[in-house]
Image (cartoon, rainbow, N blue to C red; front, side, top):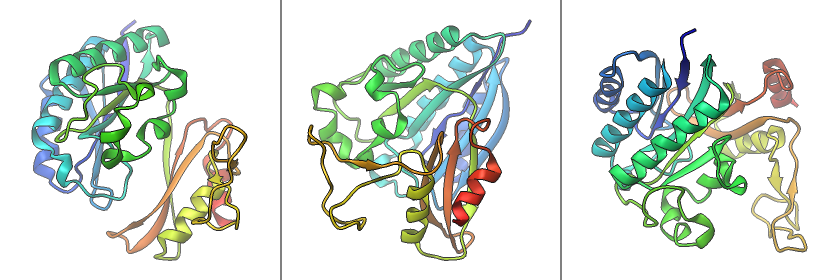
Length: 275
């Protein structure tokens, strides 16, 4: 049986379609790779690309795409609604056919080393490929985003899995990993308020929100015995969410990633946003 693995890299460019085209051209230059989808967003200033191939071909295509993105995207000038930390912000692999989790993890690790050593971009491994389980969650790694990582990377606990321990000013950092299939699902709200959209996102997402002394989003955080912020869990398991304003539509939106639709389905996520 043919080995098939999916790769879904996210690039921090969604407005200059010429840059996006050059990145996808780099992907399609690899024999045995099929480009399935290209989804640019102007408000997020981000493009999600989906392609499939054998593990070897997919890893080669991913490397060429990351290299091209590093050449063309300058993170010092990047602005967008979506959280980000690098030109190639995240690059997950998903086994599709006749590929084990172990093979996919090896694929991600080899790509991470090649990107770190060859392109001098700090690389963190996440989800099933994570070497450090405290850094398995993408949102934990990306906290502070591009602007905050210049100091964050100096902390011993944030030494990259591959590449230099100095943040790359132009390309930022990259997160590479292995995960299950997820469904990206957006709920449009009848408002332009990003504050309202974020409030809904914090209510529905599994991570919830940080508890504050006065109960307001900007209040002083309540800390636990270890000095860590106490969190109020959200309504739905296996859901990540954020609120933002989508200029193209003129509305605020709750953008969700559903990582296990067997436990939390689309209609449940939609209904939760209405509560």
